[in-house]
Image (cartoon, rainbow, N blue to C red; front, side, top):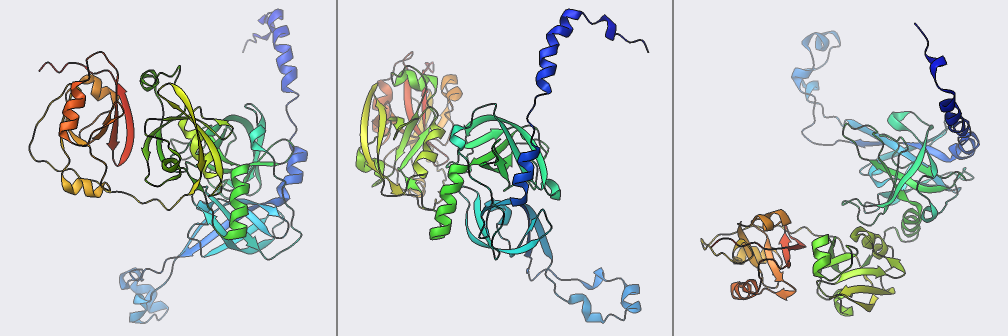
Length: 467
């Protein structure tokens, strides 16, 4: 085969030379791994299925086997408890035997075994486990264990090198490296965790293992990946060490985790809503619900306010707010700044405590009425059964049909409940007809809706229905 190497222009080779030289100066992880890996463990969990329906049927014992081993006829109905195994990773946070891992690694486990790189194994007990942060604290009856130092994830920079040690697919003490891709990523299932996104290859079994900076300090706990096939595709997410440390401290001292509660429902501010609220750009957390008697209610925060600052933190994305609120101890006094009608307004708030969430079931009735309005939707009164299931919301009408393309594109759907029009309450059909009558085509309107039990602001420009 003819070689074409000699035909590469000299100028190109000179251009590539610095890049090649730079590649030779990539970080050396060997010392870091040698120091950190003794404190990393693999975790095996077992649970036993005691379902009364689990039994070995007579048909599952072949006749030849029963005769050869002289198995009694009734042996086929003997009950058994099949063992189910799972696993993950973890690391020692305290030499006295305290180990951190993920909640989902040990959830439902009846037996937990931790295994060190030197092949030592110990039975572990759960000190406490918190599903909201996906952090669990384990304890083994052993002292003078190698442990890891905690770093500071808040000073992590995008593009910074980080490293993971764990047991992907059971391959213990596996080391992978990458860079920090982003910070403050949101996950709807864990709204109190501002995840660190990296491109460090992690897979099933890495969960609960440490994410380390180049100083060998733990800056995060590997938690989940985004994948189309169940394997790594370049999107890994870790729990910041500040969240981990706060959770571990509370689990160790109190056995449970208390979180702050502001008592608001929030959503993003889009371009149309920002224009309506006289904001120069979309930012902050738009308040779409205030819980009666909550910290926000007592302080005077209102539906339609946009929270733009919490304590000393700017709220750029609405997902920035929950982790900040949740990190505060109940009873903490703090300052909240909102945008209200284009002006900033400050509130002193005493943070409440987060209760266990309760799901609300909804249903939709139909009395056969058919009403149209200038907003491009057909609405109706809410039937009593629906109102009761929604916790007796303050007024509102229900959407029966969406006639306007603008309303449909904005996200309004049949079954939505309209609670407000341009910050004015909709108590009943009479209010709705009056307020919708004040809306003119070409003017941006803001509706507070209830969608699948969740309040949501929708801003759009109504069109004429042609009626």
